[in-house]
Image 1 (cartoon, rainbow, N blue to C red):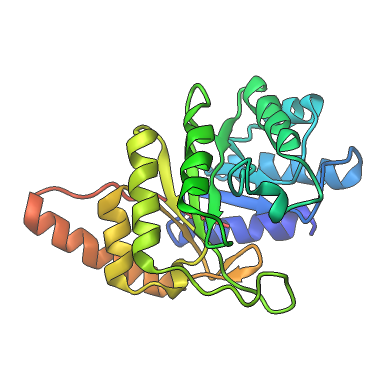
Image 2: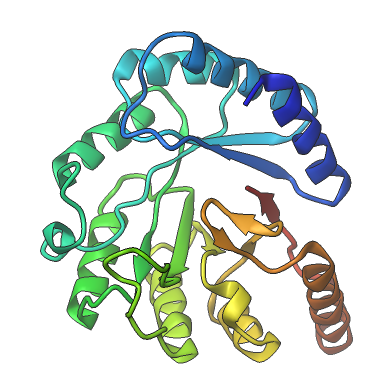
Length: 253
């Protein structure tokens, strides 16, 4: 996409209340050249709009991380996806160490980490705990930790996976909050299949951010209108109970 088209979408997201704009490319790794130059222009443009900027571009070299930092990038999204032990059952295009090297390059460049994972891919509870152990081992902890529930997609090896129960997602959010108390825990993919009750439970358990907009990379997300109703309901209930307004942080992808 050309930078001007992307920046028009960013301006629309800002008008809808988003504080951060996240841009994703379907790359295994970043390659220097005009496509990466266009991403740099997008990052600079989003920052000029007064928004935080996040990108997810795949594996990254240290010099590329430095270019993104110079452009003003707020955060780099690069999820671990699952535990080191379960990883090879799901992903063969890169290794766990490849992911850790990218995250190290991002940290060294002074960019915030947006790093979490996906549950519901057939992993065990121990695998989920192992992934959180790796995340909690980063010093400092990742500033943002997206918790995703698998959305089975037709034509993929996981298309027949049964969706996880909502309480499994609540449990994962709560555990992430306990082991990474200062991180922003982002309720991410799979949220559109949760009712208000489950989403509110996730927020009570520790989620303090949602991805805002009708699509999350390749899967559907709750519509902006639905989210505005949900947030208004939570804000009203919280204000009545506590006499104060809740923290509200939204991100557009």
